[in-house]
Length: 387
Image (cartoon, rainbow, N blue to C red):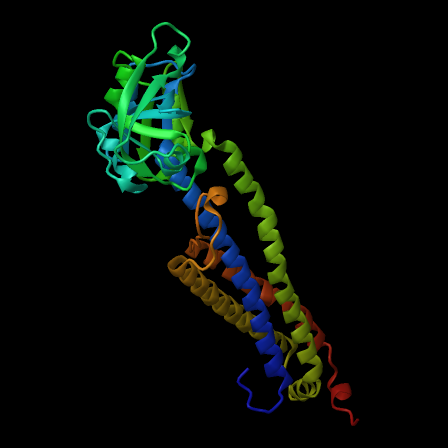
């Protein structure tokens, strides 16, 4: 590569091999970063609403606000998770001639913090009869901050004793997830208790872990210890179809972009083979001077190592550069109502970089074996004959 000889084929072949390998490595890493980013953003947004784990009645019935067996389990995770109660039921929202079915969720004060991140207008004060609704729902029904709306308990609509309550809109939220923005509204747990006549009971408990990777062990422990009819469900189980789709798409995508890296590796074999032909006379001279096959093999293996390390380094740096540009300037945008986000996030994972770099370098070394074996078979007498 450092050859100063004009038109050196060896130098050109090495540079092209590194360039091709760098493109393959960067394509594979960028793909992994995109998959990581999509999964993280979707997981964060869904867990914001649903929590990492929810405990509720198997048939959706109200449960007691205090469960002794649950308290003993939560003590094991003390300081590692937050626990809040919630009430969630369907309601009919009515404003003048407009009416829409929604899901009303009553939350405790300590759970209001997560609404701050998605609140785009108004405030998150849920005292008195205040309510927060999605921006999409407000646009659909032409509602504004300060408007008063009436909520009916849907179950009682056909009965002679309709339950209703007047609320005042104090805030609008936007999460980018149409399923929630169009149908979910938040108020205090006291207001929902009054509207649905829950008699101080709740719909369930929401558990949020500091480290979400522990959700499987927590879910298993709760499922084993809590009595029937309590049901435990994580946010991934609730959205099983979505996360299953993400897992299924990961493999074919990685295979497709891995083939780009494979093309770069094939180029290395071709380049080293051509270099062997180009350097036939030099190899013959070295062998006539006593260079062993082992030393000759080492030359090609080291060359493959250098190409692999250089290709991995430049490919990784380019992938990191693209990730930095995209995450800071959001050049590649996507429709939010489809993908739950308004731009493509690239989550850098050092473990991905390390695994890809080690694998590619190892394959480059293996790719140099065939050219080295071919070079070892060159006879000095034939290589140095007069042509």
